[in-house]
Length: 477
Image 1 (spheres, rainbow, N blue to C red):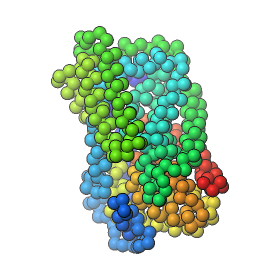
Image 2: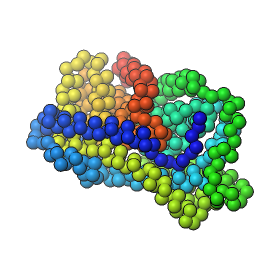
Image 3: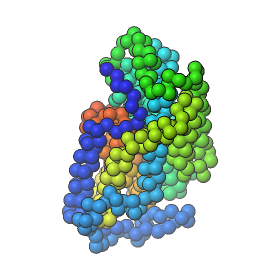
Image 4: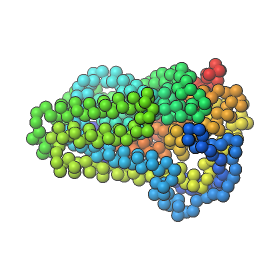
């Protein structure tokens, strides 16, 4: 039975599951500070003003560790650490989206849009599925969007339910798809773009292998998702029997609004979102815009979340109350974000993150040539558990893994592909990624349920991408 829409809100069950998983990981991270010796790589500022690892100065063991009180307060202290600006921006972004989405939902705009889509695509729902998956994969592959699509996840989840599928299908159509596109890295400015610049390669050069990866991964995701959707789908007749009246909110303002106002409000909402998508797409050409995409998406939803509901009849104090109710409902996600970020803070404060990386690089140097590229893939997968930011990992890893690969006759281009693979797919699997945890909470899916459900795809994907890397090695890419 389909649940009535309640705006953006974190499911209590999903929240508790996520908090438990993250807290266990926090304990493991703290335990590692007693096992792994502290050390650090020397760093320098390159010609572009970026702080990168100094491979000539190398690695050395140092005094480290983190006191218990700091570990306990790490979810708060993380706001004072490296990358705190981005973390604060993500939190503000999420709260704005929560308020705006609640207004859009309570005004009836979301249900009206879903009803229109259901009537239009009910009998061709699998065609719509292929289009939606392609759109989200393209957003990840070409624009490098990931956190920015979080507000669209509950919309796609609700659409999937209306079309006779379930929340898992909706999550895969949106977040899993954007993660796959992000990992294929066709023109991803935050992984491939930054990494190629650091490696001294022309930006977005060697695109043919990444395009091939996109096509193969898209085919694999469609096969996995369509096979599952057909197994759990509801009959089309049952979908068609459901009317908008079932889903429409019963607030007093709905009864008194002007006829046709929902259609006008929906057109305004689509117009504003369309402008936002064009802005994000233009950031691939105008690189100066890339630092402002999250800010613009938040502003876009803020405008859409006020202007469209106003047109639909949600006004005055009721609009303000609805907006702040949305902020309150999404606020538990802030705790999840801070706790997840505290894991990296603990390892960096104890100075053991570089030690883990140094040990991995040392092992790589002892392996056969054809295994090296797969081990580099593994190194990035491991580091992505602790550092979600693709560009931050690039500054840390590329100066180390590219020279290592070249020692064994592996090109920097192939090394960049391995980096993109390692950075992207696990974003939609690791419980340390805030966007994943938030999206699961909004979709009312527990982390354990998602991990078990998506594990088969992740394993198949790792096998496919490993074969792509071996192909690249064989043809001298």
